[in-house]
Image (cartoon, rainbow, N blue to C red):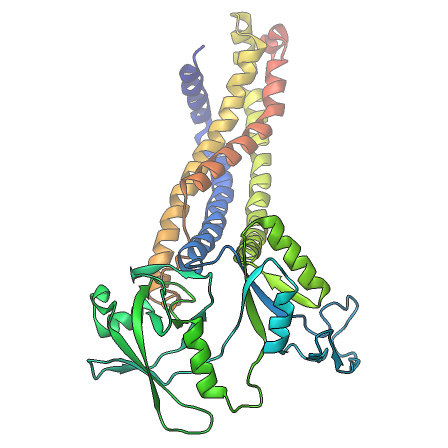
Length: 429
């Protein structure tokens, strides 16, 4: 018997009791529908990370900060008194305050010298701008400034990365405010208006527009300048401040992006009271969080599938009882145990298939409608984020999972049918 004939016969057998089959398929539908939506949420979050968050790259960069005072204390509890630790000096004579996460520029440079793997250390210079304008335009827009340390690359819509100092990369929304054809802005001069802590008078800094960033969660918030420009603006704004050259975090650019080298540097920093993360670490933590969320949501769908599997068992056991004489006749005419087993197994798989197909199709339809509605309401500020994203691999996975669960649920009734004695089956009333 060919597989197609087996499928045709199994489908015909299921239609003998349309209501019972329909109700069993609906139970499978609930599980596969839920599974489709929960996988869609996970894939939607991954897609958003890929398209919006990962538009800044840096394989050999480590983001370093000093550990929080109680970060290493395993048994520390909120509300308990925290011991004050005296300020001490390191081997280079730098004052270290164990009660603070702030480090000085001298400490950063001294720390970098202890690591032959470190090519350059760059503090996170804090800057503030009042507005940005083009040298040949009267338009002025509010802007937030960020810094791209050496070794970090921004994905660009137009232009190129920095090739010198006094350059800026504009976020796409800001560039479109000046000119819808953003490529026209590359090479033009932008004027940054800023204030210092000593005066409210606006100071002007002229920067060359190197490029326009692609859309992204981080790049949508800031216009980025190179490290030298950031240092100059930071000094101009905070040079007289008490906290000048004191930073909460900094970047180490390593000579190599080798995983073992990066792990070695991170472990050594850990011993010295610092914590470091690479973009790969940030990405892994993000995906781990998404995976945990998706697994938790999928558990609800799997519970529904488990409940539905008992429906399949019940449906096929009743089918075996109703068709006992037919099974006996088929065996008497030469159909073997294996084919009887395959026939009932195929019926269980088809119940799973039709339930999964229905759940996937309706789940995708509901997801697309929800995306369209949410994009214009609650998720309007999260440009490019679709709550549900449906990928071919996820759809195939759901189909295979549901059919596998259905097959396993049908094993017992199918085995029972294959073991029937043909003579006793023919006498069954």
